[in-house]
Amino acid sequence: MTKSSTVDERVKNAGLITKVLRRPEFGAFLGAVAIFILFATTDTTGNFANAGGIAGWTDIAAPIGIVGIAVALLMIAGEFDLSTGVMVGTTGLLVGLLVTEWHLDIWSAIAIALAFAALVGFINGYVVVKTKLPSFIVTLATFFVLKGANMAYTKLVSGSVRVTGTDKAAGFDTAEAIFASKIGESGFQISLIWWVVITVVATFVLTRTRFGNWIFAVGGDANAARNAGVPVDRTKIMLFVTTAVAAALVGVMFVLRLRGMQAGQGVGQEFYYIIAAAVGGTLLTGGAGSAIGASIGALIMGMAYIGIPFSRWDSDWTSTFLGIILFTAVMINTYIGRKAKGGKK
Amino acid sequence: MTKEVNALELKNVEKSFGSVLALQGVTLEVAKGSVTCVLGDNGAGKSTLIKILSGVHKQSKGEFNVAGNAAVFESPRDALANGIATVFQDLATIPLMSVWRNFFLGNEIRSGFGPFKFLNVKKMKEITKEQLLAMGIDLRDVNQPIGTLSGGERQSVAIARSVYFGANVLILDEPTSALGVRQSGIVLKYILAAKDRGVSVVFITHNPHHAFLVGDRFYLLNRGRMLNRFERDNVQLEELTKAMAGGAELEALTHEISVVRG
Image (tube, rainbow over all chains, first blue to last red; front, top):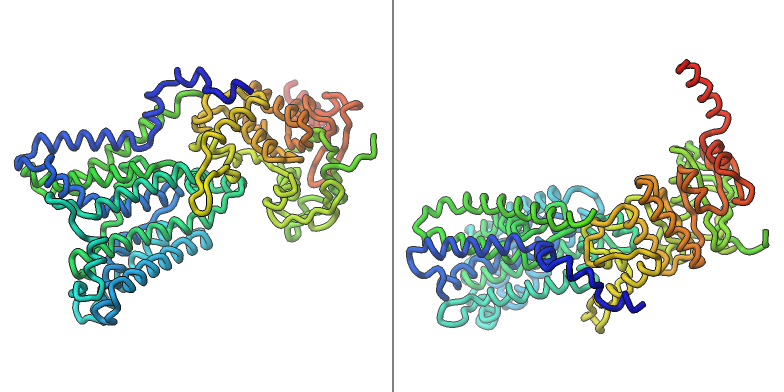
């Protein structure tokens, strides 16, 4: 078997270009470069491309990226989670209420909030795999249940629609240092480090672990995966837990940074996470995508949020801009995907 | 015939779903290292038969023996653990995943320790290439998505995978039905390659031509019953085709059509 152990000489001819084109995040990468150039040239403040500007857009991108990556993994496995945005609010409020009303120390409150999120994620996943209802509907229901509960319970316990004063809790300083501090003179948020680490870990898990292999298989063809011995239900449930815990992490970051939480916080953010994943080359039908792609998607959103006002455009148009980006990116991704696949028939 | 233990054996098996009798009195003997073809038209009960053999369903009555012992399968996993692998027509591979990932799906090779186990990609790629080559499938690049391969090649990879992971018995569900002539040829070649490696193959098909090319023994399934059994030495293709098409029915049909055509 000498032939098998060495690289087949025909592979080199297959071309580096095909290999690059096959990367799901390739389209998003091009888009990010184009958008960076767009805002760097139309920028009227001169700050978009310097350290302060970068700190600004990565600050917006980091929370979107952290949850967006988890959402991308779930979407690769062929499922949706619409309850991620509201989960940011729920866990932030939970931390706030636990320390202000029950006088817990901040670390216990954070642990309880993460565990609560994991439980909700587990319920989402369990209900989806057992009832075989579309996850779109199941998590939409979770979304509304939590949205109502956030408002009603916060009012009931604290008497207002917001929780404040989490900074008086025991252990706040260390928690803030880990989840919500700034690094350097340009004001980079520590969330940026979390985001980068999560991108690297998620990429490794997706491409280099058995679990990652199962994620692709489950989303590609659940029946074929089951026939091959992949525990389809367990894989999906774990991913629902992951998205909820990722949202909880962001909720913790917000409640520490803002020293409080609004009852309506996070609602509507779920779409940003899905946009980040989709722009990054994750197939909405499952089976393909990448964590790096979702991060690039989040970066594009961060750049738009800072770049539009810096260019003196009316920032009311930001959503419109993102809508066009989403559509264009998905079109290009689909086109490139077809091109890359059509190599051999 | 030597008195060797059969790799698979059904004796008077019956399967009913409520009041519907899907199979009755089905007897099937699969000799070791041979290709046994089960021929049947649509609705003959082929799917039910496959599901019993692969552990999806349990027979309502009758015996099911694997290598001489009574088989008690609760799930396809049990069947797999007993060396019985089933390659389903459309449910064998995941199109967007690469060839090597498909090959090792569910049996990934990992290195490392404790919770830090990661895929040994290099080794899996090597083995995939080597195994496919041993079965006569020469792929340019095991990294390409398996969806870019032709239907015949995909089926062949699925067969090679089952053989590599220790299948003694390979059940093939209509592997050639969706394929063109040349593609079918590829799959038929791998069926024989698997047989050469000592695997017992159950080849389920409605195509007597394909069956005749590779089969050692032929069963004819119709309306839930085994109508006929032929050995390779004493059957001709014409006989098989005729039996498959329903013999007398076909003669009547030929007559009717010739009347219509004048």
